[in-house]
Amino acid sequence: MAEDQGRRAFLRLAAAAGGAGLLSACSRGGGSSTASPKASATASSSATAAGVAGAAAPAATQSPSPADWTALGRDLSGSLVRPGEAAYTVSKRLFDPRFDSLRPAGIAYCRNPHDVATCLAFVRKFGVPVAARCGGHSYAGWSSTSGLIVDVTRMAGVNVSGSTATVGAGTRLIDFYDGLAAHGRGVPGGSCPTVGIAGLTLGGGVGVVSRAYGLTSDNVQSLQIVTADGQVRTCSSSQNPDLFWACRGGGGGNFGVVTSFTFRTHPVGQIVLFFLSWPWSQAARVISAWQSWAPHAPDALWSNLHLSAAPGGSVPAIEVGGTYLGSLSAASAQLDKLYAAAGSHPSSPFMETTSWLHAMLVEAGCASLTVDQCHLPTQNPAGQLARASEFAKSDFFTKPLSSHGIGTLLAGVESFQRAGGAPGASGGIAFDALGGAVNRVAPDATAFVHRDALFQAQYTTTWPTGSAGSPGAAGSAGAAVARQHAWQQSFWQTMRPYASGQAYQNYIDPALASWRQAYYGANYTRLTQVKGTYDPDRVFTFPQAI
Ligand SMILES: Cc1cc2nc3c(=O)[nH]c(=O)nc-3n(C[C@H](O)[C@H](O)[C@H](O)COP(=O)(O)OP(=O)(O)OC[C@H]3O[C@@H](n4cnc5c(N)ncnc54)[C@H](O)[C@@H]3O)c2cc1C
Image 1 (cartoon, helix red, strand yellow):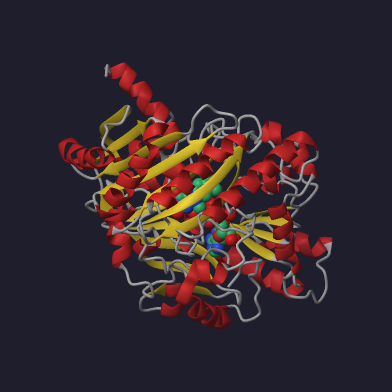
Image 2: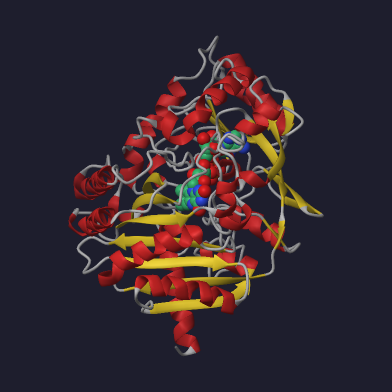
């Protein structure tokens, strides 16, 4: 392959297959930066669920008056944005325009733990619902509320000292990787550049190099959190160890507002990136080969498998992406094993050695962007990313799919073509290989219980938000998105016989009835005990709160 051609193929595949198959919701042009009028006017099912979170807050003794809100604003060293102010429309937004109809009573941009404690005293005094917000990527919109959003993004930054890094809880993933890379260090994490380190870490954090270095949460040495009583607590294996345990996988929004994390970091330099695709006719063999290869490969190899389809498209796509911590020749030797098992070479292979930071940009869908550009315009004036809408569900798989299971999987992806989705929509499933360091941690060592899976899967469907509206929107666009949602639910349902029954708490799913068992398994009881100790009045609550 000529170098230019190879580079183009690489960028195309990087955009299509990288980032745990999630780039569609993170990459440039993935959606409109402003919500469609229809989406804003009509609450989606998840937006309704977020409203329920507000209703479940502690009873108010007396509602705060405008003067009380003004006093709160005065008491903060950060800022408070209220309805009617110019900044309100942008300040209340989450990443997904589906939630633009939510109207919090205030958004507090906290600059330090004292600001957070001030906010918590306010919500306790007046019984105002509260939600912590970092990157705003909650799939259910549960970092918004009808009450006060405690936004931590002003507490951002990466401070490296030797092999550890103290990171402000409001740091976004691309800034996390950038800040660490400046010191030749890295921590495993997810792909989407605008995801917040707080939400990601509190629920686990699966992604690039997890098989080598574990989950993001496995690398936390200590953290600082403001609990409902306003106390600023340090948590580590020796200080508040029960809360430390719960904050590593117990999920965001449950135990307090985290203000910083201290991570163990790893030396990083060059890394091999690969993106491979096959004709759909080979899909069954590639899936069979990938599932017996990726979870059992050396820890240095991390890989995902992405199957995707478009409405009415001729054939779906199958792509394998990943990274390798080692030489190009050693990576090739690993990939040869995949090709041998699949019985064919990819029709579109690309592999290159690159810097750690560039690899993170590629995985983020920012292959041709700078770090500054790899943001939303509201986060960085140079930002070129757009917000996007997506429905997600997840599964863990502890056994390889049988040939019948692979047939069901392929049929599910193919059926998206006939599902009547919106123009420009996509639907599919992305598998992340597990095993390695993730599975060497005992299921009860941290709150992240999923330690025996071969891979996890995320079922996604996206649509261009500027044109298609939300599922609740009137007219054909809203109906098309509703059909996509129905497709996703039914695809997930057909995979029940093959999946473990566990689900990823960070792909929080309002439709999941068995969420306690699915997210937390045997750890749920201990999580409720920690909740009882640190938030007995359930100041922090939402529909799937511990
Ligand atoms: C497009 C996209 C791509 C993703 N890619 C990956 C991936 O590659 N790997 C992966 O593991 N996950 C991934 N995720 C899932 C992601 O980890 C979760 O959605 C995560 O909760 C987002 O965190 P956030 O801070 O951006 O979101 P937010 O919506 O701000 O927060 C999520 C939850 O955490 C709470 N929270 C936020 N800040 C704090 C805080 N400081 N203290 C306490 N609670 C807090 C919120 O109240 C909310 O309940 C992805 C999600 C999306 C939408």
